[in-house]
Length: 156
Image (tube, rainbow, N blue to C red; front, side, top):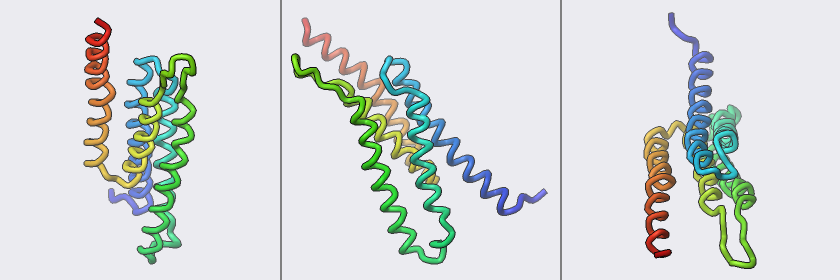
């Protein structure tokens, strides 16, 4: 049985959105394990929202015959999402005035990267998604362990 174009498009769109949610939840799992304020649900939604906005733009049929206009619209949407998502990240950054310590920068950066991954999923940039997820997990797990070891060495 041959699938109709509409059915193939539905499967493609669904796969991109599901991939965005999976990527966001995967990174969010690390944040949940580390007992951070943003976890699987939040980062899954961040990635889904970014993917949804980017995918809606790419599938805007009015611009299909105008690639230059579509390119400008996609660029503007990506810029808007990435700038706007900074507000969510800013909400987790806390500064203790008495000690001067700043907390939440990694979580804020994780929100930003997750939004970018959602956009990459929407654009079906699978190689970029795979490498970026690997690097994000490396930074969140391996480098976190390395930072903890350095801190233990300082406090001796």
